[in-house]
View 1 (spheres, rainbow, N blue to C red):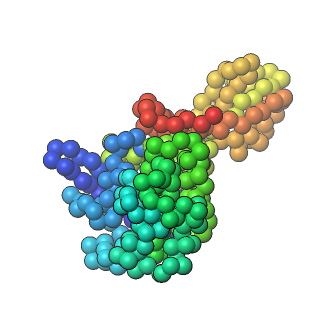
View 2 (cartoon, helix red, strand yellow):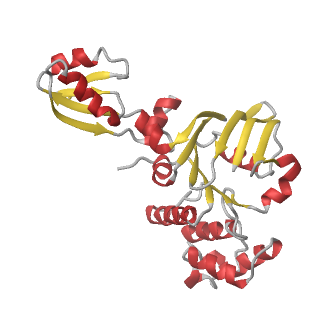
View 3 (cartoon, rainbow, N blue to C red):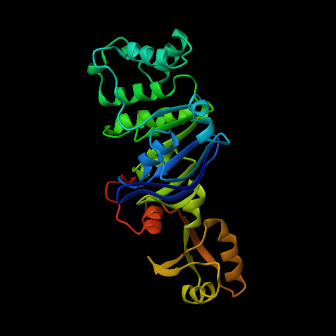
Length: 305
């Protein structure tokens, strides 16, 4: 859906996006993850044509945006930062106004979107009476006008209480299941881990890593095991180059290896007449993975239970 190569944006002496290259596949939820100031919103602005790049190339739906930008934008929806609506108009009237600017599909589209985001019962109340969560959900409805194939949501749960965050996350999952490609920008690690299929981790305007969320955390996984002879087990496992780390912990051993290789561990130990009595996979959280690859503190992030 989106191909970015060597993208750079510099504001004076400040480099907001530095030689960024990434791919956003079709379908599912793609997370742009990074702390505030990592370049997420700037990257979205560059893709949408709201900001002119200093250098680099962007392709949308396989075509260079410099030649097909207007055509591509008709297939894209976006909510960048806080949604802005007319406070004295109702939710329905606000959507009708913005629908009229674009290529809306009539009253039926408005009713469907209002129901989709859970605002059907409050559609005729003025925007100023909406809670923050309702305002964010109306922003998502706005982004969905015209049935876009690709939707950018920039920090859609910003400032919401836990209940409001859960509602917006559920909505994002429903949109992805309906066939839309969602690009979710967030600094909340727990949120990204819950809803995203793929993720790109940014830090100071640079891409640190990109891949499927499940594969990234599993690649840094481990197993905790107890054996009939832990001392001998440590000697044996220490000779295997596919085990990244090995340490003693809680009366057993923790081996830095993907849990899928549990059978290989068992087989290697059996050859030396050491037998596994207990083995438990340890899955690394996205937060721990983020800290490992960025080498930064988790300031401003949300952690899971």
